[in-house]
Structures are given as C-alpha cells and as structure tokens.
View (tube, rainbow, N blue to C red):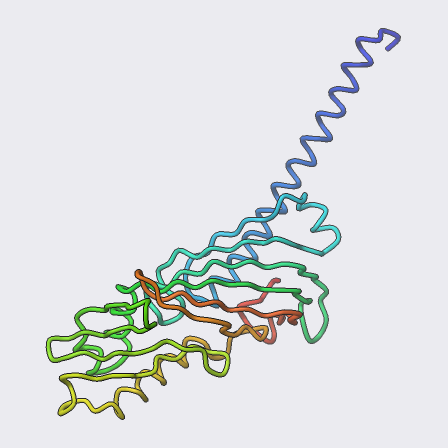
Length: 240
C-alpha cells in the first residue's frame, strides 16, 4: 500500500464500484417509476404508454419525492372509447406525500391529444348505433374548423368546441339525411358519446382548446395545482 500506483488503482476501483452502484440504482428507480407512471396513464386512457424523465438525476428526485419534467406518450390506438387518439403529456412539479386523502400534489399537467380522421370515422361507426353505420368517410376543414361526416346518403357537418371542460361536436349542417335522421336525433347521440370521453377525468383535467387540422383534430387538456388521488379513490393510481 506504500506504492503510489497501488493507492491510485485502489481509489479507481472504489470510485468505479460506487459509480456502478449509483448507476445501477438510478436505472432501477427509473424503471420502477416508469412502470408506476405508465401503468396509471394506461389505466386512465386504456392504451399503452411510454414514459421518459428529465435530465435531472432521477435518484435525487426519488429521494426527495419531488419529480419534474415527466413526459408520457401513448401508442395512439385509442383514448377510452375514441379510436385513433394519441396523447402527448407533460407532468411537472410532482410531490409524492401519501395521506388518507391523496397520494400527493402535481404542479401542472399539459396534454396534447391528436385524433386522426380514420380514428374519428371508426369511433363514430362503432359508438353510435345506426347513425354510425352510415358513415363512410371523414373530411376536415381547418379554414372554418369543421368536420364533415360523410355517407352515401348525405353528410353531417360538425364543429368541435370546448364546453364545460370537455369536448363537443356541434352539428352545424345536415344534408341528404333529413328524412331518415333529423338533426335533433344526431346531436344528442354525439353529445352522449363525447361526454363519455372527458367525464370523470382525474385531478381536474379539462379541455383548454381544440382545433381542426388537415389530419384530424388537436385538443389541449390542462390542470394546475392538482391533488393526486390515491388507490382507494381511483384504482388507476394504485401503487403511486
């Protein structure tokens, strides 16, 4: 041990072991957190979800129970009953503190949801009896913010809007279907279905804006200073 080279080698080995241990622990806690978050999101939206974390060492976040810059992206298969919906989600300032009433708090949530034209068509076909079976195509018009549900018998023009924290499809025009399917029948059917997509969202998550694009519909959902439910309040958050 009097040999300086031996001392240096011992120190290098010790440092390498410590670094390897910290790296292994970092990877382990990231994996565990990934599993917990992706499971919760997948349960809420009913689709597969991938999670990534910010550049800040996750081990420090885990020890402090304070997490930031969490990014979640779903597979794009569906969100609840809406086919072809994809979620891009950012979570920030999450503080885990278990109580009888909550699992902690979340500073902000910012979500972008994209709904493709094919997804809209499939969703309407599957979700709304009779009316859905008539739909053969979907055309979007970003210039006036409308969606046209097309069929061989005519077309229904709808306009997405934010209402009471959720999304609606307001019927603005109906052509060719008047004798078999009056507007008064179409609108309640759309309202009933759209309400199932956004009702009972946890943590006060609500629609903030919606726009029509060439590819479909894009909507923003947000919440701030929210309480995270625990497993007793919402089974999707079991183990958070």
